[in-house]
Length: 417
Image (tube, rainbow, N blue to C red; front, side, top):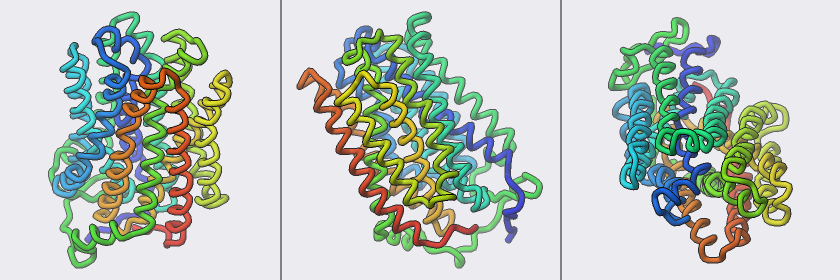
């Protein structure tokens, strides 16, 4: 069986992975800056607009087991190709106009993004040398936040100039970029090959290999081990707190700036992008800091910053820039740490897929309730005190469960291919 050299860094594949990150968050975040426009044009309530952000996350929760099965049968490369093309298709449908198209397109996008959520940690575990996992994971999550930042900044101005349908359609460009980058990285033959492929990093080419079933645990064994793992369960709970907090703040930060600070729709949409911009600092800074201080100590800093965001908005919304920046650094760093720990805990590709599916499935199942729950709480109370208090609780859950999970996972051996 061919071996993969860890001395040669697979630049084409890593660039492809980073470009894939562009389509996995930005297009669905684009709804938040124009939530007021959508409410007016489509006659939606705050809770219904929140559902447009919640639906993809709900797909992450419900479809993750099926996505994991699909990745296992179709292979990581083909599953990745399906992801980027499918997100582009969903973007087109969502922009067709009307309530039905918006919701159907959003669901399609969520389904294909779910496949991407599962497959990317598998790609990183398979293709990236162990010592580079942190920086590659950080670069990938940075790409997700960069695309979210761009959509947060530009969607509202585009909507006012060309209409909300055209504004949402514009982000199909991310899918085109990701598709071209992925095809160039591995070649059309590998991209559309159904079945497991393994890279020969020395040449940058891929070849089909037989799976040595005696060298890896059975699917049933991996599944059982994953659900009995205290580290995996703690990380699932931490990821739930991360997802709940992230999608809740992302969905309603612009509206909070409108209501509490008095910004216009356009200004609020643009200003809220600090929450996405700062995530790049966390996503790239966490791998570098963790190599010096260790993951548990790094996690403590991330947790403090995460909790400060909703607490600050609750007690001093006028300093929204500071709290948005702190929360952005934390959410970028938080998801990076969780993905790093998934790769570190994984025994092999099959185990990585199982861990990714479990942690993200459980986490997104709880996180999916965020935007709608916070919107409903605001509708019921007419203020943001209760919604922000709920976010405080979710960041505390992330902090406690994540630190415990990081300490346990950090006791395991560093991963090896």
